Length: 441
Ligand SMILES: Cc1cc2nc3c(=O)[nH]c(=O)nc-3n(C[C@H](O)[C@H](O)[C@H](O)COP(=O)(O)O)c2cc1C
Image 1: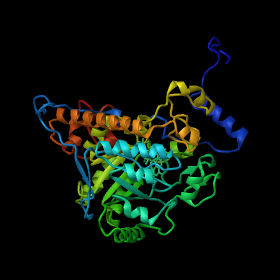
Image 2: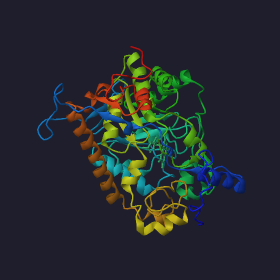
Image 3: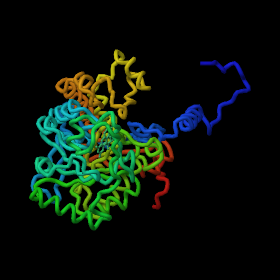
């Protein structure tokens, strides 16, 4: 590449940066929009912009080795005869068989089960391996109905009606032809090797009243045994949560704009939805106003990476969190020894930037039989379980430092923000002040 650094008259444009120029050239050459996996890559206000106020004089911290800090959460206490009890408030988000290999789905189940939490199916249905290895499995009921099977529905420990995802609220996902193997095609009753778009809305309802009827149907089919979740992408969250509760949800799953996806249009991922942190206070407010906060549980996802994120999401009002991207990173051996193979995909080892390609050298986001064999579901499951344990221990550490004997005792009052944007979105004071921008006192 030519080195222009010695030419002082060349000046980079803040509006037309290198990446923007490259994208215009790419679009002009190909005439097609860019499709990719992962979530938003731009910087948006996030949990890193919040800090905990650990206890000192005015608060009393708990001792790590002797005093208990509970992490157990019960989901679905509103209507279900058998609510789902998870030992840590970190669950595995719905990720489709098709996007992920059968080995990866099995590994997610193994890892989640080892620590007593749940995992979730996805577009494309339930695999036998996944059901077999998951002690707590949530079944997604999606707009596409790909892989939807009433027998599998009845085998689930909870049902998640997906209305939207944070990466693409208002839109549907994609599964490129290279991932449509015989098994994926057969489960989805669609042709092999042809790109598939998932629908952006359910075929049989137009609004919340229809949704209430659909939920009633699902309850009848499952004899009121299991919790029914509603998953929404974060946009008009305050209203969406109120409508979900009105429609009868036991649990609301709220996915912020940083949330991952297997593949969708880049323009969607970066330009639709609101940050996870901004959505949680809206959801908590809606639940509180309806008098159902912690009775209708709130699961939050989109950019959860460590125990601090878990604790902050809970302090803002979540009951639990779900992880997608981080779980795949924990599973996988995105190792330098595969670097050459990653580079052939336009990525590099360590970037996890190839979900859409279907040629994942680590055997996670592929249907290629040889590549998927590279992932050992037992070893990968152990890695995920380790990671889930660390998230839990980290969240407990922070909660104890704030004097809390259950993660759910964390509250917005334990947090401050580092900048004005985060303070306004999270509705907590700017650090060192009592100023919450936008709040009337
Ligand atoms: C590979 C992959 C596949 C996904 N498939 C689905 C799906 O089938 N259904 C769904 O509701 N969400 C799907 N998602 C989104 C996740 O359920 C979740 O909302 C998101 O990953 C959370 O954000 P995070 O990745 O930052 O943790 C997928 C995400 C990834 C990364």
